[in-house]
Image (cartoon, rainbow, N blue to C red; front, side, top):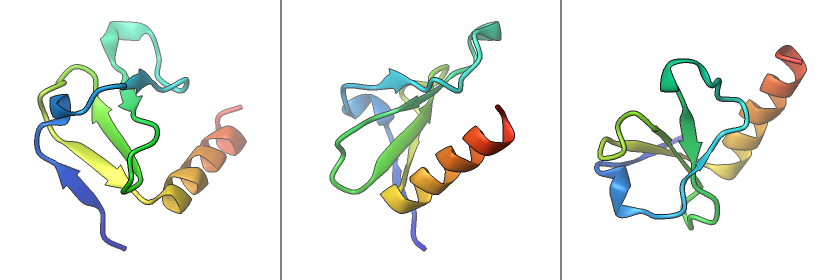
Length: 71
């Protein structure tokens, strides 16, 4: 599996806070829907930092695991 890295995540628009991010200390994971290569993920505290792009199937598996283990 090859993940893709976007060096400056601020070049993309439409980021949304993940519903699994907490509200404490501003620690948030943001995701971007509709990207052609998969699901970009970034740290909201570093909007100009990198974003990792995961294949949709990998991201879906991750979200399902969260739902099962964090409910």
